[in-house]
Amino acid sequence: MTEYSNPQIPEGINISAEHPLKDFFLMLSAISFALVLAVLLLSMFAGQLVRFIPFSVEQTLTENLGQWQLQLPETDSPDEESAAATLPDDEQALAQSNTEKQVYNARVEAYLQQLGNHLLENSKRPLPVALHYIDSDIINAFATLGGHIVVTRGLLTILPNENSLAMVLAHEIAHVQHRDPIVALGRGLTVGLALMCITGNGDGAMAQQLLGEVNLLVGLRFSRDAETAADQAALELLLQHYGHVASADQLFQYLRRHQGDAPIEWFSTHPLHDQRIAMIDRFAAKHRLAQMETTPLPAWLQISGHSIN
View: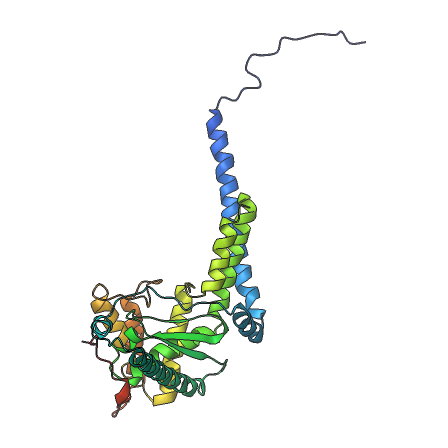
């Protein structure tokens, strides 16, 4: 039988020589890194999986939402202010003015839809698009779910010809064809829901914000790769439609010169880079022709306002 002994336990055997906050921050950093990695993986998988959603389902979603609003920041147009100041009190005159405005807006929308349809004829994946026109000073154009594309009056005022307008429409059409809106929305909702579960934020604030993303459908953010791919596809559509890409860079040139001079939303979510203009110039140089005439905008569409110069 071995002899029993009760040795003296050394002092500080259960106490680390390191400061306890160091271990805490190491654990916190590891957890944070794991969470960030999980969110990134969720975003990547969501972006790939939503592409398998049929486009018809995407269209049905926008139809069922019904209340989705094409909202833009309100701006006061000098023409509108002067018109309001001189507007007769006669309600019949006011009704006639509103009717004429509605007829004109419908005519603009029909023209945009016709041009969009012509561009789609040269698309390899002709998903249908629906063009919308908003009477707003904001310089903007955007694509959203279900193939809806919106163009503002402010944008039309700065474009010198149909070719430059076609570049904008082709760019937004490319986003629809590439399913960029559903990818952006899917990533945003997936990450938002994941964060809601992780943080335990069940008070409805984040859920309401996510619902707002679904209803607004305007603030969708596309990655820089998606924007580059849309530019490239747009140039291909223009080349097929006109035989050249003259004036394709006109809007980009305007935005570079007048970014601080007018209310501009187009490309506000992704900074404009000279590389994009250079890419258009390189593409144009490869397909330059002796005769590259541009197509003027319809005379009735000549809206006084900003100048492309």
